Image (cartoon, rainbow, N blue to C red; front, side, top):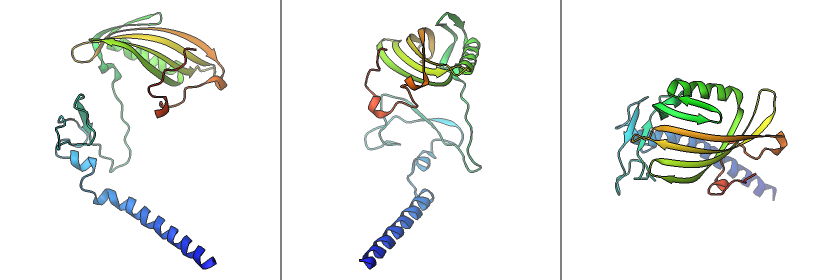
Length: 205
C-alpha cells in the first residue's frame, strides 16, 4: 500500500513539473499566439485598426463584424508599463453637461469635473443598466457606491441621458443623482460586475 502511495505521489509531482515547464516554454515557442498574429498589421507601441472579419479568415477568434476593432502591441521587455488615457477625448470639444447642479461646457471643464470627482468619491464602484435608446440618444439608470474622506459611505442613484455626434463622441449629457448615506456593512456593489449579475436588473432601493 505504501509503495502505491509513493508511486502516486511521484507521478503527481512529475506531472506538475511537466505542466509547469510546458506553461513556461509555450510563450517562447508558440507561433500563432495573438501577439505574433497581429505583428504584420500592428507596429509595437502604436494603435492599429484590425480588418473586419470575413468567414474562414478572422485575424482573431470571435470577432464581431458589427464592431470596429483596434489593437496595440506593447513592448514589455523592460518591465510593466503604465498607461494613461485622455478621457476627455471621448467628448466633443463643445460637449455640454448638466451633472446634479453643475453645468459644464467643453473638454477642459470636463477634465476639472472628473479630477474633483475622483478626489471626493473614493473607492468608487458603479453599475449601469440600459433604459432605452433611439438613433443617437441613450438613456441609462445607474447606482454607485463610494466613501468620502471622512469614511462615510454613500449609495448614489441616478438617471443619465446621452447624445452622440456622427463620430460617436458624446456632445450632450444630463445626469440627475440622489445620494443616500449607508453603513459600510450595507454595501452590495463590489469590483467589476460578475457574470451572474449580467442581464439582471439591480434593486430599486
